[in-house]
Amino acid sequence: MNIVEIINKKRVKEELTRNELEFAFNGYLNGNVCDYQMSSLLMAICINDMTDMEIFDLVDIFIKSGDVLDLSGIPGIKVDKHSTGGIGDKITLIIGPIVASCGVSVPKMSGRGLGYTGGTIDKLESIKGFRTSLDEDEFIKQVQDIGFAVTGQTSNLCPLDKVIYALRDVTGTVESIPLIASSIMSKKIAGGADKILIDIKCGVGATLQDLESALKLKDLMERIGDHYGKLTICEISDMNTPLGSNVGNSLEVIEAMDVLKGKKGSLTDLAIKISSEMVSASKEISFNEARREVLKVLENGLAYNKFLEFVKYQGGDINTLLVSEYKQEIKSNKDGIVKNINALNIGKLSCSLGAGRLNKEDSIDHTVGIILNKLVGDRVLVGDTLFTLYKKNNELVNLNLDDYYEIN
Image 1: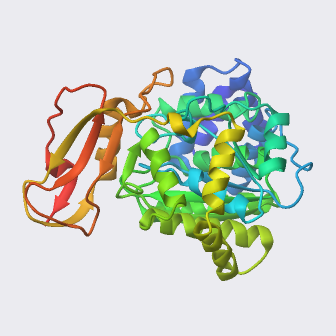
Image 2: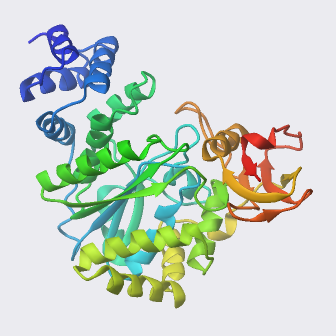
Image 3: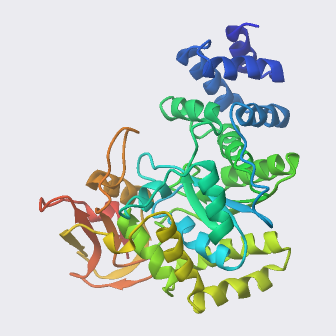
């Protein structure tokens, strides 16, 4: 086989065989296919799409490039959750303790953030001592003991996906739906859970910005799950405005704890919905029955206590959570109602403060970020604080308010 012929075949919209996909992708992993050749193939896929058979084959190739976790030693149904990423998305820190408190095991492998969408691992590293790298035995034992664990993706779980994702990130091919689905589902299937819930973010602050693309991804990932005998439930949630009121690392851990302690709002509503879907699928009970269980563990404090147990088990001291002492309040210059908060621009601003990374090697400041003091639907007057910046130093940040808040 010849990699140039394979590239040309996809360029003219022909279906690639399993052998051709293996030759190209495994060849790239092994160093026999060059960056520029794989970049060309990825762009051809991005432009010309893939058939279901090509996608099923590619998922399988990704999975078989490394290890598959065996979670059979953990009793009962295991359910995993994944989000396609968004501004202020700390849902894992909320739903994990809730679902585990309902008696369902949640083995969760998470990643770091790149750009303005923070990663769950980064958020948890805001907590001094928290161990985000568990070996397989530690990971399984923790899920057996307390029902919930979070660890970074092991080095040999879908290693092919890692190198392909890194290349996609710098070649303008991140938004390819077949490649998004193959990346997510290969890791979820290799992760060993019985059932999978995918939270697909849609809006200006997400990879997918239109509902049509989100629905296409939802349908595709559910078909991949069905192909592998894994019940896969996909929820589509809004990412035109940030999720919740806190954006940053320590700040998002704090808000997750607030939700578990009873804070109300759209973030809580989404967490209840996702948790209920996970419990319903795992216990094979109705959504309403599952929702009653979820509300009960929130109201009686079991979910919050499970979060504290989870942090302590992984070596963290929750009392070490810090936010920056350098604050700047951004005040409204008009009266009116908040009509919209631009998620993308808030995310970019948070990243510029030091809460995100532009390159994988960049370090982040866990103490900085943004708190949105006014949310969509709130009435504001001139001089009211719209949002508060938590910064590295006292240097003033100059902003154009209209880039962040729409007030009419």
